[in-house]
Image (cartoon, rainbow, N blue to C red; front, side):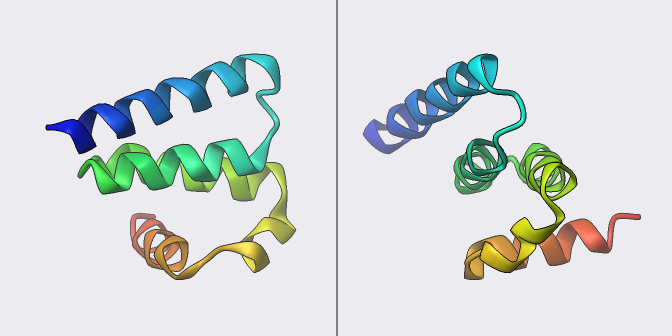
Length: 77
């Protein structure tokens, strides 16, 4: 599907950005969102967790979808 290719390309772009700056919470969060849309919840949660670990204040900037993923993550522990 065309949409799958779009998200695969997006994930690759975020991976490339993270090679340049692995401490970018926005790139981690956006990668997590793309993974979530693809149905990869476990990896998505890991990316969202990394974003919050890098910048604890980042949780205040999360959108509705990100809150849902954060909620799932918080129940994983």
